[in-house]
Image (spheres, rainbow, N blue to C red):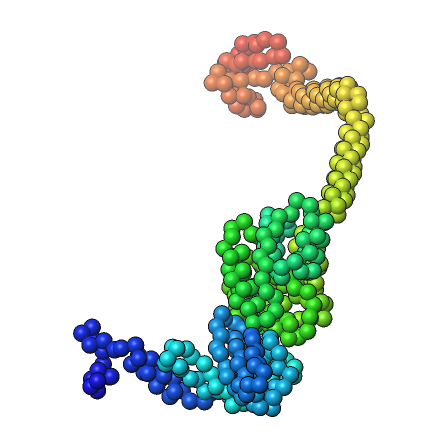
Length: 406
């Protein structure tokens, strides 16, 4: 085989399978030694053999690798290693060209202790909090009466029984869609995430409960997994976390929309109590009836008070009052008119008397006369006329023609 055949492939000159396998092995060998973190899914110790085989699983994904190590390496670093434990190991990836498989060869294995697990969880908690996954403002309210509840829990578990029994005791007509998954171990997180996606896509599900009974910190580790926390955060349906007991606090509790202390508490907080609601409805009806009765009594008293008023009890009284007032006004107006006419009559008589007293006619009535010349000039002195001048003498009653004799 030429160098060109090794370095380049075409449709006319394809690589044989052995070449592809060799190239993959060469590229993997370049990775060198690495530190790997994972969860032990299986341990295989063959009697009398110095080699131990481990299946190392990523708790956040459906992915696993085979690890080979020496029994002395395992006994030195993790003598009590069991399935489900978290480990950190120093290993080199190896690709077996003959079988086309990838594995890890470890020369050091450390079992992650409780203190280190808590430190990792605290670091992850701070990271998720900084990203806003715990923000209370984004948490959604669960519906008062869900149409259908999605339940993710272990098969035939006490948590499943507690949720279903207490929910149906409180509201017998409640409906559930239960998805049973592994709630601990390497396969727990992928199964829970898949079940969460299925229930979130169901339009009939109004709320999702993730429930598990109590257990050790290691048993509850899947519910503090980063992938599960992010999957819950991405859900459109409100999620209720009901993991363990009151003292247990996996990270799922902080991401979920509602945290229940136990599975029983989740049933109580998601489903209303029928008897309590009937009692509250009865109390509300009683308050409403009292309010209506009080309103009717108050308005009846108000009507009675209005009807007892004289204007409504004896409407003719108002007419009589107005008639009396009208009569009094007419009498007063008559008196005023008569008084003004009398005063005007008196004033007219006095004026007439004064006028008559000042009138020349009154003077004539006392025996005086007015002498005028022919031109109408009133004669006031004898020197104003001469002998023979005709005069006109005006008396109180009639006139006289006279001539001056001397």
